[in-house]
Length: 91
Image (tube, rainbow, N blue to C red; front, top):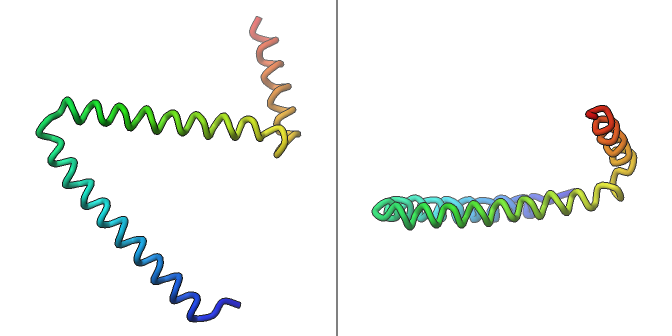
């Protein structure tokens, strides 16, 4: 059973995190306004951030794909069978 003191400590920690996130969002908003003065730097920065985000997402998807046969072998086998069937019917 969780005690009242533990719950209060968790609430305090969540409030601290929320305040930090709000401050970070405020800083990002002010940075966006400053960056609008030079749109070329902003576009390059956005492209670099998007590439980093996409590469992270692709790595995560590949990791999940590598783990799929071990975590859900029936689903994996069904997917391979379906893919083979569809490729066979496409000719």
